[in-house]
Length: 282
Image (cartoon, rainbow, N blue to C red; front, side):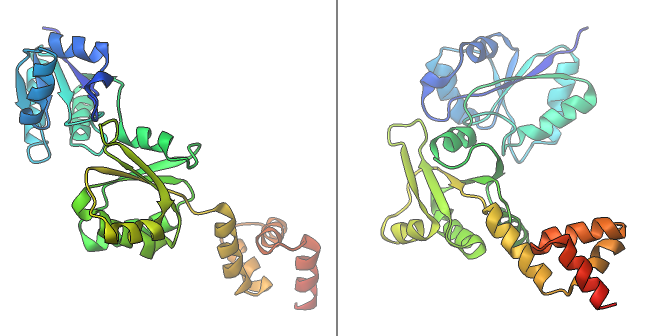
C-alpha cells in the first residue's frame, strides 16, 4: 500500500476570507485533520461545510500523537495539519510532527498562506531585508535572560509574539535589554479591530501604563544599528594596546601581515600607524 502524506495547511489568522482554495480542497479530500484545538477548528470547518474527521494534535501530546499519526500515514491515510491560526510548525508543535515524518520517510508538503509574523513585518515600517523570528519569549528566567542578551546584539529586525496579559512585562524586559528602540505593535491582525502602532519601547511602556492591552500582539522591533555595533567593538579594541591587539589575532592563527591589516581596520587607523607603533615598541 502506498503511504499517505502530511499536508501543512495554513489557516486564517483572523479573516476567514484569507483561506486559499487549495487549502479548502485539501481539507475536504484528506482522510483526517489533525488540529491544535478541535473546538476552535470546528468553527472553521463548519463555516466552509467541511465534514472531514478531526483529531487533536497539540503541545501536550505532540510526540506520542505524532507517532500515532505517522503509523496512520504509513497505512495509507492522508492527514492535514492545521493550527489555531496561521501556518503550522511556526512557533507551533507541528514542527515535531514534520521532523518525525521526515525521519520516517513520510512525504510532507506545505500549502502556503497566512502567517502573523510576516504580515506584521510587512506592516511595521521597519527594515524587511534582514529579519529574525523569536516567537514567544521563554518563561524560564535564565533562558529568557540569555535570549534577551542575544536580542540586544541582533542587527536584524526582530519579530516576537505576545499575549495581552504578558505584554507590559515583555516591553519592560525588552527595554531593559536593548534600551529605547523603534517598535511597531501589531494587534488583532486581519480582524475587525486590527491596530498597527508604530512607536518606541519607551513610549509603548508609557502608553500601556494608562491603557490595558487587549487582543493578541505581534511585536516588530528595530535591530541594533551596525554603526553602534562597530562603535562598541572599537571601544573594546581601544582598551587593548596595539601589541595586545596583534597578539589576539596571531593567537587565532593569522599571519603577521594579515593581523596588522585587521588591527588597523578595527581601530580605524592606517596599517602604517600599526607598523610604526610595533617598530617603536619592540
